[in-house]
Amino acid sequence: MIRVGRIPYLNCEPFYHALDHPTVLDLPPRAMGEAARRGEIDAAPLSVVDGWALAEAFGPLPFGIAVRRAARSVLLFSRRPLARLDGAAIAVTPETSTSVLLLRVLLALRYGVAPRAWVGPEEEADARLLIGDGALQARGRLEATYPHRIDLALEWHAWTGLPFVFARWVVRRGCPPEEVQTLAQALGAAIDRGLAALGEIGTKRRDLGLTSEEVAEYLRGFAYRLGPDEEKAEAEFRRCLEKLEA
Image 1 (spheres, rainbow, N blue to C red):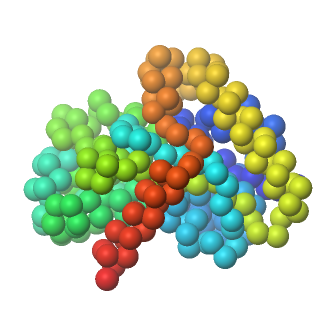
Image 2: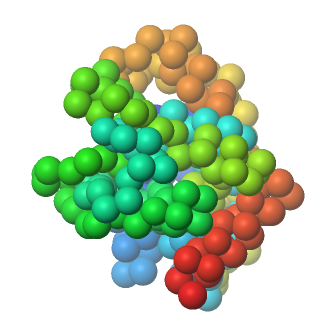
């Protein structure tokens, strides 16, 4: 049986809430990519940059985590606007693979600024990058110190006019084709059932301090089936990374 990894963020609940397939590991995005490299999973929603790096070993499925505009949970909490972060120290959550690269692209290519240092989450910083449930929970707590709450996906859309793809489901090449097809069908059905059960998901995830209505509104902001627009967005992000690293 295909070993499926689970990212335990609220925005992934529509995949797993009613998925008719067991999962073997619960890990945040960066750790999930590392588990894929070590051969510990066969399928999961990998951060797009991890999926690209592992393309020889894993093939893509047409499902993932994308937003047309705001993500609401990929946030930079900052003392200053993005355009004024030249020479700043930026603290980064260790959970991220893709979001920190999106931030680097926006700073360098959109605003032409260069931070002085990238530091760990416990260090003093001019701005803090948080993702997933941690970002949702930090919104009220950090804003007294960091008055600028910057949604990176919204910044990307304002700059490019494109959606942003944070993760894409991939499956290990060499898995039996019939099992891959079964998993893909199960994921498609799970997304439909999950999006029809947002109230149940909201009740289950009361640990985040959000109302059921807030959970539903948040999850409706994501695209879980990826099509041509998302492929175009991935290609543009990859082009930006190549330019950044040139």
